[in-house]
Length: 339
Image (cartoon, rainbow, N blue to C red):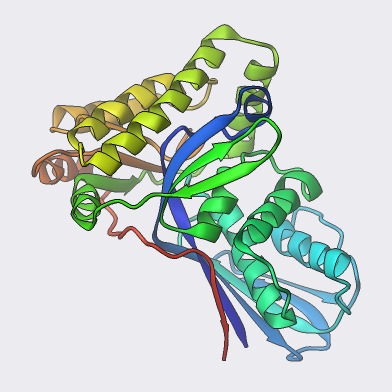
């Protein structure tokens, strides 16, 4: 039995600058951090004479005769996409097996769940088949499977966050090169950030592809409001890096608030009346900034709560039937092993 897990991430600053065509035209930069929520993949070779897929969190099962290619048809396409690419790129001899998956956050949550699942599955296959893939190899392959093979809209950060893990400042150059810069942040700053950064699930997921398509179209058509907002988001990723490295944590809420204002100008659908009401309630209760994680429209939202204001913010948001979720920042990326 081969097992793999990869961490989900919170996008702290710069989100959206990793999406084409912005990253191709101007280059992007993002600061993100992985948390103790994961995507899991388990491969059981020889347990069946068929190819079996089981998405345990979705309670979906599929079976296919052993074949070198499985047609994506809207049903567990991520699992099919990884399998197809492993067979194609690494000359894998098709055989019977069961691939089971589980993700700690629902699809459309804004924590990069789809990309993280791709990374976890690639990790399981590489462990099973003894394929020597480095971190950049895994992340790039995951990106190509999602964005090219399966034509799923999105950026580049999630695959690299899940593969590398920890706090990373990522640069997306105009020549399609990605540079991951791990940040050495003092432990006391991380502990304080973990205390002050409160994570909530809004109870609604969203189709990030629609929002990302609008965002990409605005950049492609040179829509100035969206373009200038995206430039500012890139600048704020640098400010966030400086605040974390120097321990100037009081600036984080301010940066998050500015990022949220800019993010809302990137495309329609990033916010809605419910999200605005939640945001305003958190600010009134003592937070000095926050943002939706991911493309927007729903999913997870987090707030920076200086001092001990987290408790007042948590209490204030109970009226929306949402509660704070426990998490820890993690240092490791995708991890695979056999038992």
